[in-house]
Image (cartoon, rainbow over all chains, first blue to last red):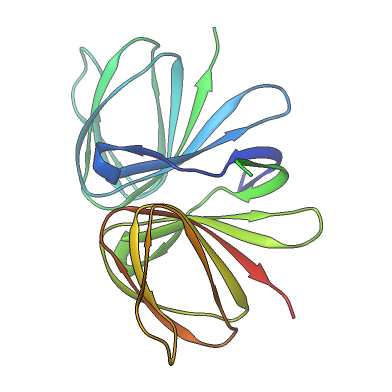
Length: 104
Length: 104
């Protein structure tokens, strides 16, 4: 899917880590939410409230879920993070991502 | 206006200046287009194809249109750039912006 239709977008960016990670929130008619984001190169730790699908669309990223080893995505790839967890990422380039929040 | 409704968004980011400037393209039902973008601190030169409304929603930006002096936006402000021109900006912080492309 290269575009999302019939959505609402918040005008202002979400800003994390002094702007090294930014995203835009989009809302779908069915009430679901995604964020479209960009990470500058760097190391970050995120926390989840909901289960998240992290869909990497461009870049070179290493990520580590709790209790798992580091894994690498080069270019495109998807991983899932359970709700109420922290996970670590190392962006080795500018990383373009789409994060989907998945209700229980 | 804090959000835009009934729009289509392209999933992948537009990436400029090695990712120091990124944006997302949103398309409206009437065929018009905007980009929602973020600049990392730095100096950039942009070129326009259409007349552009640059709506700065957060950050500290200096900008210079052709034949004019440098001007400053601290926080929020709007400026217009004619079609087929270049303009210079100095982002002194992370800058959040909304660019509207205005047809003739």
